[in-house]
Length: 590
Ligand code: ADP
Ligand code: MG
Figure: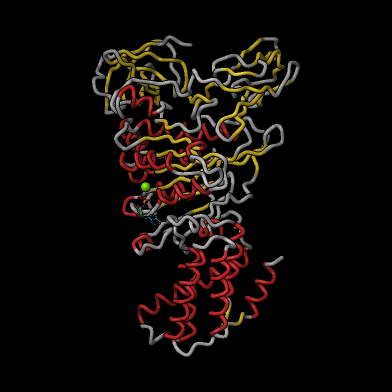
């Protein structure tokens, strides 16, 4: 550990210039002394023997001459059992404990242990003396919430190790020695249940990165069927203020088919973040019936907290995600909102007087965003098991304009785009994912041909709708009018979903397949209508039946009753599948 010391020579917002004696490296952490407090800071640029540092705290009181102590360490996260259920700030301080000690968000320079050090965990070893282990391998397990938390060889134990001894079954704290390992040169190293890892360095202790091919089911129809997300994949949700970004993320975190959810509540207004913190512990996990918090970690940074720690919160959250992936678990990381993080980068870049890029964002914005999303992935571990980190980030572009740099940089790297439209959210068509603008490169839970067919009906119907605005209903043929009604029908009974209805909010893959075929039966059929009014009346009735069907328990009595209603209504207008649709549906059965 270095003992480098320095002193502040200039203060510019939350950036300080520090003259130092000795060795300082990029991204090293240092503490600025103000009165009796030590304020955490990170080196972001070095010129000669001047270091520019971003301070992770309010900088009040820092002045020319303030002393700085460098630590020789990078900004790290502490990894070990006890992370689940925590609400942290960007520097991994448990917020409830911080609040007890200091009052919410007020006191500076207080750092609390990230893990409960006094808590005892029931350890069961899975290796024995003489075994060979590598970084990221498990040596035992402890129960944590609903999981077997694997105790891993620290990620910075590079090389090959032989287990000299391993602690026997029993209860221990995270700092007790769990094993003694011997490296190739015969040096002994002790390991406990916890260790640190630099947050800006991707964890890479896996055998192989896999193509993200398995769908990460969210139980939101519009996503799984039309704009799916893969396990280990990436997606973004841009949308104007109030379009429903946060609601979608909450619904997804509750229903997604993953083991662990990590929420990086980043830079949004304090009120919204506090809502998240209050709301989550009250949510029940549909899988276990217990609190959702048991398998959730929240990293939270409000707009009233120092901007620099937004950056830290993004990296800390992805590091925790990678840690649990290393245990063979599927982790979903949701970042809300990445725009606030980008704004923090912009602010810092301005202070550093770097040459600005588009809209004054730094030129490296794109590569930072890309590097963040690249930390997603499904991997194969040494024991053959698979784990994944899926990343979904919201983007909140000013005025909802997707042409701005953060949205554009994000679109270049993600695998799916769920663009929220103001028009849809104003019409209360939720989720407001635009069905024509959005896209995904991943595999749907429904056969592609079937989805494509419905997409064509949708597109054609929207075109007719636009034309009708000009020529009116009278100027539209009955055939076109029916196409329009079909597309509206698809939207209102399938794309739209009530995230506040206990049944409708989560639609299983099995049910999506079943429902979608029924929707296709309607889209792919010819009907005999006397007039446009007749057609409109029919579709109104049909829509209501479908909406009732959606909120009925899967395969329950109400469900079966509604299905009968739908089928008999279909018969009243001599519904008959076209040859094309018939072939598609038949093929889709295989
Ligand atoms: P954003 O995060 O994009 O600013 P929110 O997710 O906070 O927007 O949503 C704003 C409001 O819109 C919510 O408080 C809620 O009233 C409404 N809303 C959003 N999504 C839905 C939904 N799926 N169902 C019903 N209401 C919704
Ligand atoms: Mg929001």
